[in-house]
Image (cartoon, rainbow, N blue to C red; front, side):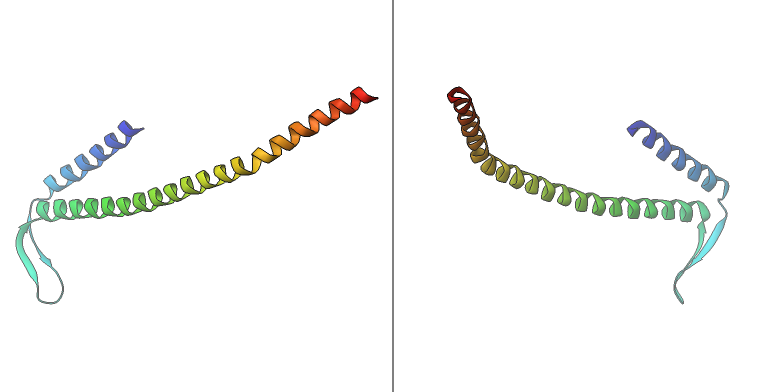
Length: 111
């Protein structure tokens, strides 16, 4: 699955690159109000936009991974606590069960 994802990423990159190579005319990019960049090749605009989007997506995925790893560690801690509670509570139950089993066998022997 990991190789498939990398192959898909490479394919998307190549498609964007080929699209950008076909669009090399100079353009002017206008930002807010009076800020503008003129006579910049469209290929530069497309590739910069693509890489900024990729970086933004990566940063979002890092945030999601951090949240999930925090949740996993909380769940592991809760699981360890519950296992400890079960182990603490199960010892008397096992002893009680063993005592009941012994008393049953003795009562059968008496009859």
